[in-house]
Length: 134
Image (cartoon, rainbow, N blue to C red; front, side, top):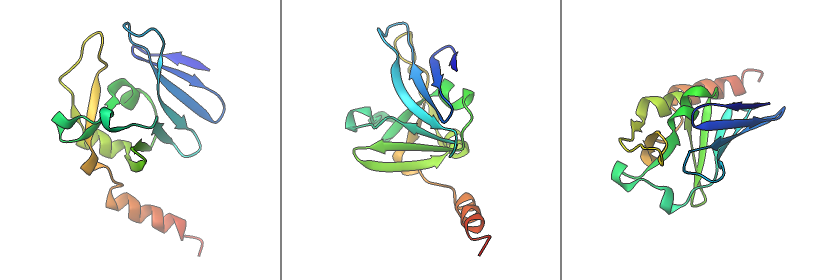
C-alpha cells in the first residue's frame, strides 16, 4: 500500500512502512525513515555530523508532515553510531519549528540532542507493564 502526502510518500508492506521525502527539486525521493508497525517506532535513517543543526543548539531535524501525519509512539535516531530515542509526544512538545523553508527545503521540527529521552513517567509505566506478570 502506497500513500502520498504533500511532501512525504509512504511505501508499506505488512510489517513496516518506508517514509520518503519527495520535493520538487529532487530527482528521486529520499528515504527518511522506517515505521515499524509492531513496535510503533519511527526509525530515522542513520545520520552523521553534517545532519546536526548547530544553529539550534545541536539538534536533529524531522520532517513536520512525517511527524503529524503518521501514527507512531517512539522515535529512534542514530547519529555517528550513538542511538537517541524519545516519544512522539515529547518530540512535539520540545521541538522548535525551523524558520527555514522553501521549495527546496522541507518544513522541519528541530529537537536538540539533549532533549532526546523517554519521559520518566512513561519509563516507569513501561517497567510496571514489563514486570506485571511476575
